[in-house]
Image (cartoon, rainbow over all chains, first blue to last red; front, top):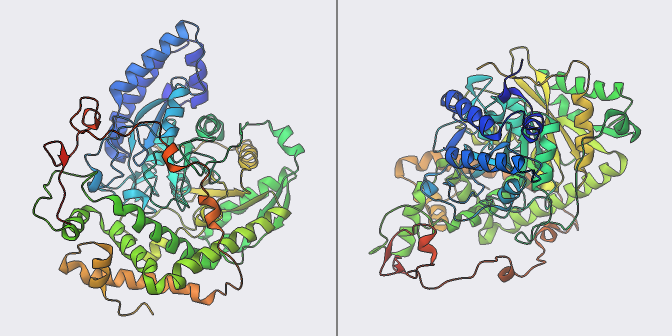
Length: 487
Length: 99
């Protein structure tokens, strides 16, 4: 018989609502699990155990009194440490914000609490979301639960590793260039980057505003959908959210098949990935073909320019966003009296990690007077072209399919000193951020040596339902299972 | 194009202090990434317009985005000090460097 922490969140929530188990019992089991497991994974930066117990008791009371409870009743949710939770430290995995306590809740956190979800703690990440491995954290690297010597992916590595290692059933990450999907792929969990403007960014500490989105991570699509429904929708505190009603469903297979989805396969990008990644991705294509989906070859001609465009825009926005860390409004003890402004500002910013400093330098360079047109303006034009190319592709097909990552997880430290090698890893995930479209990574099996492989699906803006439908199809293939690491 | 950039000048522009012993390494990395950025030179934009500004279209005035009210007196009992501890204050003011 499965232990409570192994069960899907939607099953446990039903048990809590039916009073088979109390929210307090469940939260206590989860807390013990985190204490037992996370010493090896390093997925949490801070905990919220006492508040979680108090909240669970309040939910149990509501249930006993017959009061309606929300979609996430009694379910613990881990929050990436760049998303504000009132009263908790919000470090962004940076020494710069090591002591910063958020005075307010991000909208997504308020919405989780409105649905009776329980914030259990803050999760480790690459500093300010800048990285693909979760090695660039002031609190040490997140370790991959499938092999502790390997990277968990990033930047939401803590969010994916905590879910994969059965510490928590659900988490929130943020995705600027693949930061939800990459660790989901490397840890064998499901992670979605929603359409730009469909989930509020109010309370997300900005790295690159025009690219990033908050999104959920879970072990199955059936667990992911209630969390996505909880956080989606217009927010008057975020000017970029769209006033559009969206409630996603996990439809049954027969109803999905009636929709006769056309799948565009990005064969060129599949061929360029590592052989085992390509092999498993093609297996997923075959599974969809067996369902009767129409399969077509698809191509993005500008994909090879996308990396330069993405990093120009991301570093430019980063250099602007991070200029607020002047140690006056946020920061650490240290009197500024007697200092001249520029030297104080520069010294304060020495607390940033090396990767963050590198990106600030790059952003300052591409925005400087002589180079704005050469880099930033051109990158934005390219971005527009990429969007148009996606528009054309989605006139012909409903879904695009490709690997999430071109490679398998690798050893901690293996690529950290080579920025280009590191940035090249993002080549399949940045496309969705540049175009603002939704993208999901779903588990695609294991390599011969037992490392997870993720398959990525893209859909046109606000077509998350199509991604969910195809994910449901793939999770219902005979023989599919949720792969769980042995720790 | 990216070769031979003045890294010290760039640090000054970016207001970052990089220790002298790290200058060579950071300089190498900046040049390497800028070479990758130069790939944009191969791309012909034609008449395409950047449309990303649409994403940032303002529908609500900034002053209406927050529902709290600004408070000027840091020493008052319901001022921000009661919500979170401010660093580097003196006589109810935030200390700053010379400008």
